[in-house]
Length: 433
Image (cartoon, rainbow, N blue to C red; front, top):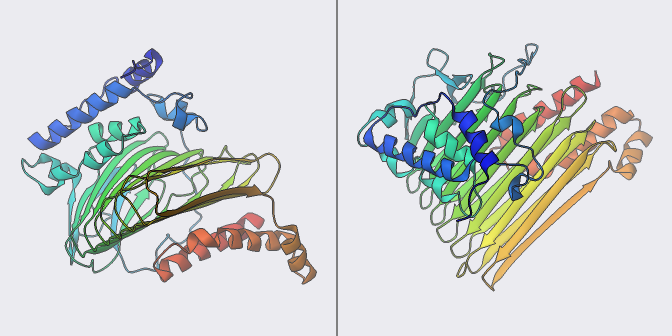
């Protein structure tokens, strides 16, 4: 193993100064110590690291977060507010029991991470940090290891049947210097079904991990909106392991934010599994810098599995979008169907889109493809709308929504997709003033 560069170790030492591992039961303590050992063997990322070339990790490495002003929503209705759901609230990364519904729902067991980690024996020991550890190869993910080692807040969710309602994790940002560290673990038993909704900015700086095991024949549907605070920063990680004939679908909407990096690592271990990962981002650098990075790694390690990656970014006023997506097909993973699409719509000449699509295939009976494009607004479409009396700003917004439609179409629940689309329409109208 190559020696770790000293600046990466120095950055880690400064980041962890004054921090102690949380107390817990034997299994949690051992897991956290192992995560800290992994972290110390990696150090924090540097700009020359292969998967950090497009996104500078400097402010994520810093001991303290940059202050982030709390966004004024002006009385705007909550995201997913029209959907019957179980609401669980975190404020600046800390669970708020008074604002949350009781942690009870038919077909599902929910506990706080702090409670589960304090038990000597718990089902979460087979998952907490386990999927994160697996996701460290072949690409190191130091912030995920940091999270496993030090996170105190989060939920452990075991789904035994079809959840009676979606579970909605609501994140609220109230402290301009809050530094959130949240870790969730979800296990879907064979045949189980869960829709997990997430919305809100959570903190001035957020480090979040979500580990998901989808059992044979189970289905996990995940829809996330990341809040609209202009100055917030976030690095999130999803680590998923899929069983036979299972379904994993995840969609993320990002609007505003100084720096956002969303990592998703999916291992398809069971035959005939399906994984769809999608995202839509709208970035405007006029009020604050906007840098948005989607980094995805999907491993096919079973027969007849299907994966889809669909990412769309709309960028203006110097905004920057990044997509790094990889499909790895292991030997023996025959009949793989892997597809990857990353596209950007640049609304001015100052914005930029940086893409790194990758395929690595070690099986000979597969159908894998990737495509990445970047371009300006469709002039013919704009002319068509304007010739029919649609003002140019409104016509541009209609084309933006049409551009994002492919990604939104990946949302399974029609009511949720409608809410997301309506939200985007309202935000675009408000921007027009």
